[in-house]
Length: 261
Image 1: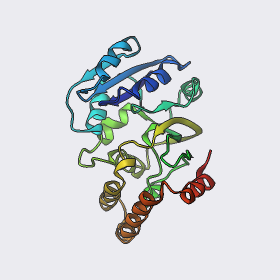
Image 2 (image 1 turned 120 degrees about the vertical axis):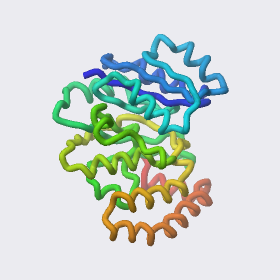
Image 3 (image 1 turned 135 degrees about the horizontal axis):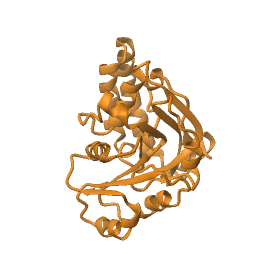
């Protein structure tokens, strides 16, 4: 099957080369590379022009944020499958896609696996990802879109990203998907990509918490929504404590014990 690899970018000339290189070196070659730029004002456009031979489709225009750019990319994509790899992120190694698409996966609508952090502010990187159900989203953000392959036709059925969710539109979309029992998802027990922990949702954690409560109210049972309202003040305290302690030696020791890979 043809895969559409998508990178959305704005003013990321220092990190985009690594992303493009990780795509270029894939042994699996049945893909197109779609790059959507949000009218960058740094050296990004010059850099993209230098790599134009590696890019199938390119669009540069102002947008309403990362998920608006991703929605534009969905419309541009010609592949049966779509994969989003943000500027600054990279596929794990050169045979990542070859391992995944050694099989056609005709019976599945979604493929997902693990991701690994890089450049963690604490100095301790970690990987996460597990088999998911709708309940996995009740009180957590259990997945990163860098670990997900979407069958393009699902966007026509479920809709694209909801721009009312500025930070976690990807999570809200996943909730919509897992609410539908007739869709089939396959968990891939492998690390698919490394992603920048200074990314959009990571650096907007307090706003992310508010959005988890919002989409919970829209999609989850009432008792789960009530629990999330109760948990919210505790999670705010946790986020603020992490912000205060993340540069301390004790916190780094804890993260190394808890997450180190």
